[in-house]
Length: 134
Image 1 (tube, one colour):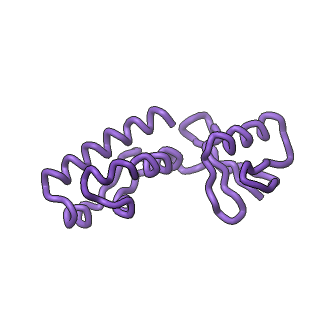
Image 2 (cartoon, one colour; image 1 turned 90 degrees about the vertical axis):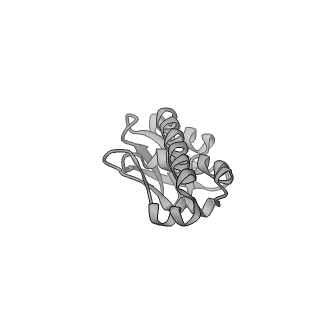
Image 3 (cartoon, helix red, strand yellow; image 1 turned 90 degrees about the horizontal axis):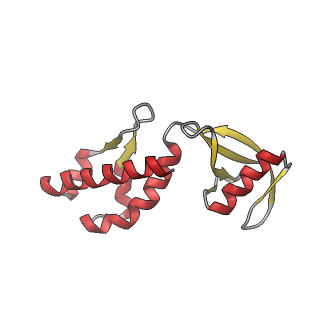
């Protein structure tokens, strides 16, 4: 059974679909098909990559949708700071306040003080944009 993930911060709008094997789809076609299923009470969601699934819904944690999109967007900027995509593991978010949380101990091993502060500033700027758009 596929699960339509609903964003509690955006009137419970579908932001992604999770398949039974745990794969997360948040591409436009998958999301629009999920929205259609909910609006029209369709029994099966058609995966654009193949397969059809019965579906259910689940309300996500606050800021979960935004954080998934943030991580996708942030990947392209990591090279500015001579960091790797894997270093995104040192960023999390607070589901209550919606603020980014940085593992300062690990990030300071990779960045000097000036670059660490610039990295935090840049990532917080990006986070703000994502929260507005998603």
